[in-house]
Length: 113
Length: 115
Image 1: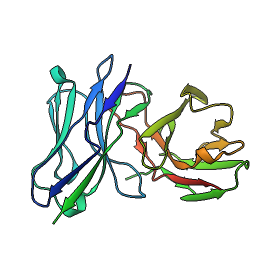
Image 2: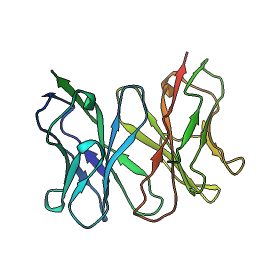
Image 3: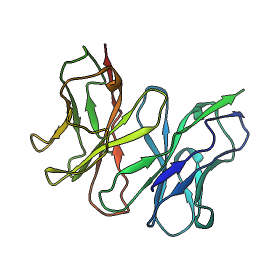
């Protein structure tokens, strides 16, 4: 069955510290992987995506993610977190064609001064 | 950059009433989707639509729900007789083609509150 697991419901990081949000997926075919960010009451903004090629992908706002097929993981990282990064982060997997996107439960990021 | 737009941003409706949520996908997109996010929970797939018909739907998308593309620009989600548990954020998304290298583009959502 297709699924996405984000093990951490919430994470608190000090401003300026590094960040890693975990994501594991289960998908029967070649996965297409995404990270979205959602600020309170707002829509979903695409941070980055992985389809093929280089397993380290760069996104907006200084985020990057690394695809590890052997671990079925697609963890999101940022070297130095800013207070404005506080939001909910969703990992998602989608197939090719018009297939739906499957979301993880999300990880809420808190940033402390 | 083109955007998916959704109206209204917030809809308040009495239980049992019909509600229509509207979406204008990006103009050259061919695949359309509705997702739902109950407060504090994950984003859940409802339905996908291509070539004027439903291509996939989830178990959430029961007979109370319907989708329509009444003209060349709008994509609507109708809930026939709303229930309290329909209160959620509803996201519309669209995609250009079946090309796997294209992600879905999401609107900002409509918050539906059922009283």
